[in-house]
Image 1 (tube, rainbow, N blue to C red):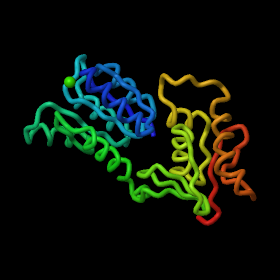
Image 2: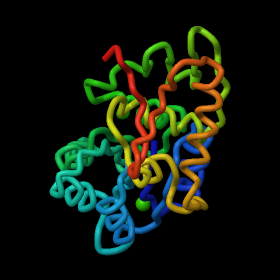
Image 3: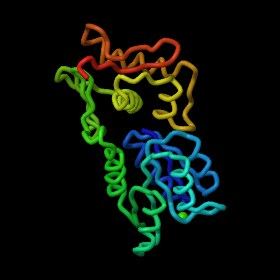
Image 4: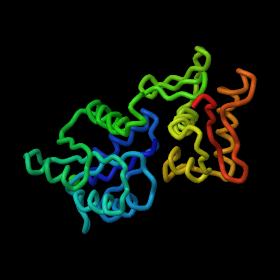
Length: 227
Ligand code: CA
């Protein structure tokens, strides 16, 4: 899951980035409103964390409004140093999904982010599955036929993205954009290499036909014959 943070206070921004990366999110950071607006409206994110007061022409409210005007439905958490009732309603009226007042505990922020990611109806469950494989997004565990499978952070992110879009072919480009951050060193074969790692762990040891299918000339999908 890829997150955008737009926050001019560098200490807060880097603490958020570090915390979210420990939780296996791919994270991009912008420190001003103009740059942040450009990223928010052009790159595909799964969640955005936007500070309300930002340097530049566009503040947090402008960014949220522009994002929603472009019909981008990505969940947005607004941050603010102001805690008045009006600030909260302004933030939510502009199209943000939730609102957090500074200072806040990082645990609280993570809980809100998790809640936002679960919000769409089809994602209410934190257990994602395909046939006899299941992934628990909270415990960060993966099991197949009851057997625990250990994955690296990137492998887990890749599997989670495939499972959230089960039975849907995903282009290599879309996989790259949702699982890797902007600054990541991506080589032309990076996705293939990670798919190979993942197959070696979730498919090979279990025999039969693999869950991860190659969609020739396009990308990959996870197939679940039961659903
Ligand atoms: Ca600020």
